[in-house]
Length: 282
Image (tube, rainbow, N blue to C red; front, side):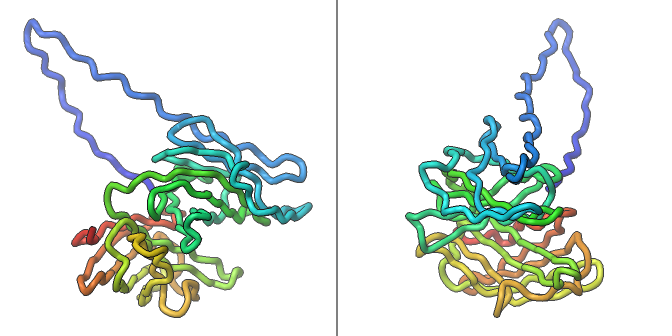
């Protein structure tokens, strides 16, 4: 998501006989993530780096290209590239496409947690985890725009959250893809293990529609996490909304108390951060 920062430029006033103080040097920004191309029959690798460290190629999972398809075994835990304990993870792929990213663990078989994707480039994203802090298998699945699919995995030890987080996921397929879309609201690190429901109103270029939301996944007991989706199915036909960016209004009811948020999706971003008023219970 792009943030516009406005800063006032003020003249520096130096008293007579005093020395002008220079600002402390800024740490250099990490270079853009290098995205290797495909090689032979193998797809381009999915890459990720943690806290600006050198990038790792993913453990290659199942894929399908123009020339071949390969079904891979489940990723061996000991062979997964290790991102370590990192608060800032960026992932990328050589070409644009539709991404699905999740966190899973053999120790927590009762839940698979979604990952928020914050665009940092055309085909690179900053990853924001959900679920309790811990070491997880980070699974990435991509449908490249050119066709086919690919997948890959890493090991990531996610950090403790400092405050409740929330985001809405909007995926709109094209008309030739059936017009199906996904609408989900994710609440994390909040007291949402009990009664929680609500509505989300989404407005596109052509129409607005309101969806009733109920829990589709509350993780494991005591996780303080929930994914809300339209009643009946997390996927439904939303093709009439038209193109984005989308205007989103969310009303979530947690144990009888309404919490409301309003946001506008960034161009080409499927995940949009939500800020609730009042804040979600902790």
